[in-house]
Length: 196
Image (cartoon, rainbow, N blue to C red; front, side):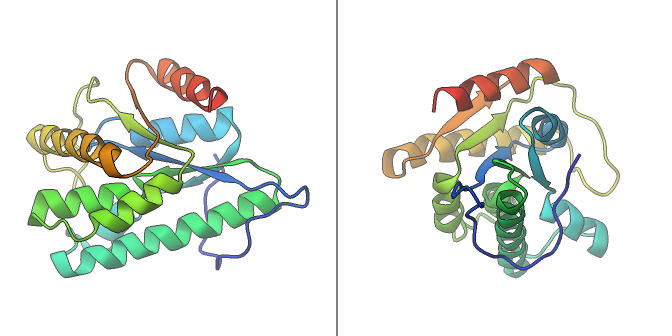
């Protein structure tokens, strides 16, 4: 799987004048986001942007405070922009983001009842070719230090549904909920991209 680096952002046009496009993969904890990102990068092909929030928690041993959430979201945005530039330079059409800015905003809402990050996260999601929402139809698995429990997953999934539904009234947001096996999820995304 190709992954992102921490290179500075640059222009997105490839030599042929095309731009790489972003796919934002979202979902509560243990919904198969990382697996889907890897599978999509292989199938499309493209570059992956790993979840900044996961890296932050691993580095600090805790979730970000309310005040630190914006830093996590800004870092994710910077990494996505850098990956889009690199993908275009390499002639790749896709960047697949694990969690994207959207999930940082969802977790800020879930943990701190803070909606302040949502406008920026939704504006970024509206620029994506597709927001892919992973269903919670797979068993919840523990991931030491990273996951809080199946109830948190259910709460995050509920919030995602509410935000996507509400956002559809105000923002041109293209999203797809996927479920089933990894192969079924990839096929659904590929089909959705083909008709866009």
